[in-house]
Amino acid sequence: MDVSSETFETDVIERSREVPVIVDFWAPWCGPCHMLAPVLEREVERRGGAVELVKVNIDDNPDIARRFAISGIPAVKAFSDGAVVKEFVGAVPPVVVAGFLDALRDEVAA
Image (spheres, rainbow, N blue to C red):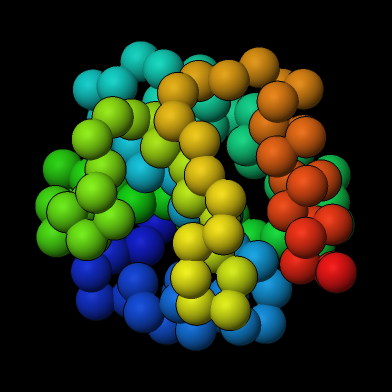
């Protein structure tokens, strides 16, 4: 799901009070972003609704990028209870994405 400045509060902040929300900050011109996206989608899907994934195009939503101090992309931030609880930057291998999501699940469950 693509999120904009108009929907960020509802789709990320409020939704993260119910289920962890992973935000993929990206841009169309970013090659590593295009490599990471299918990995994120696959790993989130494997978790059967335990987490949700949304995407923020930083070119279209620079205010959100500034709000969360995005200085490099792809940047991935995990939100829970309305706040960032985990994050990473860069196109990381699938095993790292899987570990990130599993650690998030374990932290939220604790």
